[in-house]
Length: 425
Image (cartoon, rainbow, N blue to C red; front, side):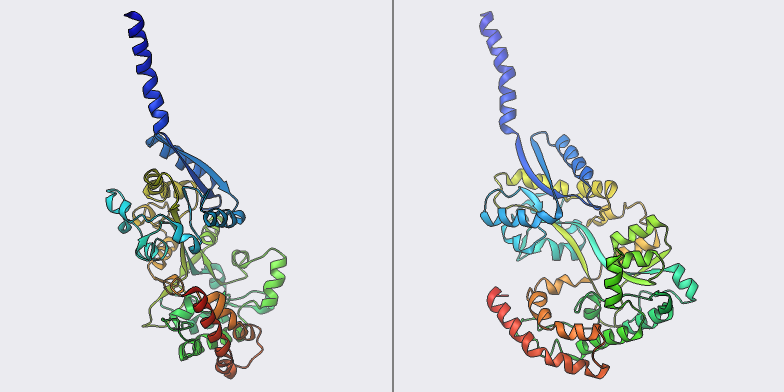
């Protein structure tokens, strides 16, 4: 009898441990390390999650950003070996993401309404599905160096400024003889300033470039660029090339007081704070009465559709890209959360620059149009590149801008038709 009781007690001890081992799920999480998400912060997320979920273990793999695309594309394309949870930052991967709609509907602690609306709409919602959660926020805006403006005796720009006022202010601040410029040039056409001027590269139904790439609004935007280049208030392509070989970019020029204004982002903003530079932030210029756009982005954190543990993967994803995880990334890294209630906890949220940045996040995103029109950059804008290059290099007269745009309509239309036929877009 004693032997039986001892055996029974041993089994009572062993069985629960065996059952626990069988019930423990291990998830693969691929992430990158950087300024916004240092590896230590990702480790903190793992530790906090596992402490609250002892039945789920997280195997964290930190990949170099340069290798991430190839690894994800290969595994997703093969349909085997992809991580349970990862950043689906490539829209080509979105069809392979798990639809989270039913999970969010059943989740009492998290929903789409918890996130900034524009970031949810452009980085999580896709074809009627929730293919991920928007992790963090980023945006372009114009930073101005208050010291440079004060020394030049020029008033600071305001949020309601126009593209023409941008040129006027840049010219007033610039001192070309000392290789000091008032502002920088757009990175390309049909970004925020173009959209703010009412210019779009082709029709909403993706059928024609004619009447859009060469519309009055588009001609006005390209002519504005011509005027900006002609003002001498911005670095030339040659200036940028020379400075680039010296390891100097717009943020370095801005910090050094050699660039009065620059279109930068929140990471540059934090650098300026750390460097003690006195600066302000305004949105990119727009035309009064027009809808206001911003170049903004987020990381789409998703569950792979082929995961063997969808419930547990969602549990971790909702922690990582939900309130708890984004709070950790904000406190231990430099991530600005996409959840307003957490964003409000930012330590310098009451500063003018932070409030200006938060306001920019509410504008309509350029991605709202470009994301629905995948042929715009690689096909149409590439075909129309000559118009941009000729203006940037100062090789055409102002009154030739419209004719230059008209000259690229046919190749741009051909590029659009080929792209739509290939992508069905």
